[in-house]
Length: 393
Image 1 (cartoon, rainbow, N blue to C red):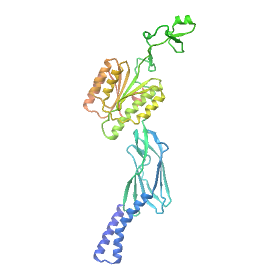
Image 2: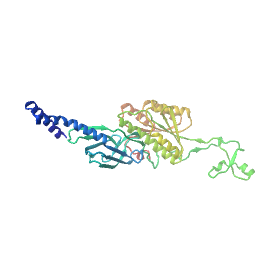
Image 3: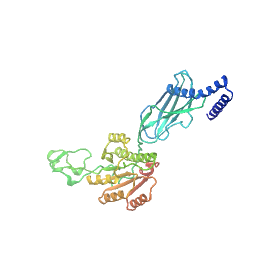
Image 4: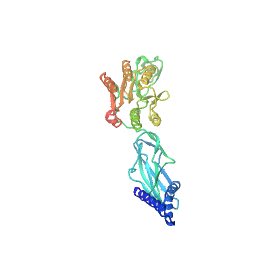
């Protein structure tokens, strides 16, 4: 292209000099021809842009982060003039089109069609444009090149990645993690309040006097079934750093929460996810359907809360003072969080902190060491780390 441009400039200068020195019909014809070339070249580029038929397609508009999705691009020339140079540039920040690192320059004869069958992979959750970002068109003499943005975009909804853990080493070790309920004999109602025995009932709850009177196995009804909940408190404040550093941290927080809640619901262990977005949100996950609903909701979370995770922890504990097991997932380690955690532990709450690690300042390092020295369970996880190796054992 540069060689052609230099040749054209030399030709234009030469014709201008000839016109000024000699004149003549041929000289002026050459001069006006040189002046007309850019006009015709630019008009040709706009003609190609207006006539080019372009189509891109994926079989689904929803995909999980990191999974390959089939992707098809088609270019067609419906006119009667050849298209000498058409090149596509793909989005490559949030989504990678396989083979997009190769030069994709197309020459299309009248009625010709070119197709690119490949795959794409999305790196971050959310809703954004993928595929072709812009189209470059060059004229037939390779003098000018104009880049046109796409008039319509292919948008995908990218769901967070769900890691299936084989085990979960952060659960309390003093109790069976599959035990949801603990019963107390002091919570029994009157002996007359009984029900029929069901397989699996505790034999100590059989009302033997009622059995003798009625001739069938009866058990006492339980007034209250004390449930020890597993609470996940999730960070929702905006992360620090560049756009893609923020997305990496936010995505890792979601991946941790989803991996833990998926494991717990699969093990028939009730879980509640607490976060702040337009008010304190509480999402109960008791079964696969609950998890599926939360999973689709999680892809639309904005991470723009102005309420620190320590305030969410304090507020929930105040309104729900019963003993619970808390998992705090955050990318901020602050002195306020340390105070809140220590206060919760003083009230016999069990807390595990999962810290999504990024370059820390000195204050964060000091607080992190204080949390560890006082016996708190703190796990540092980078966006690149495997959850299976850190919490899945």
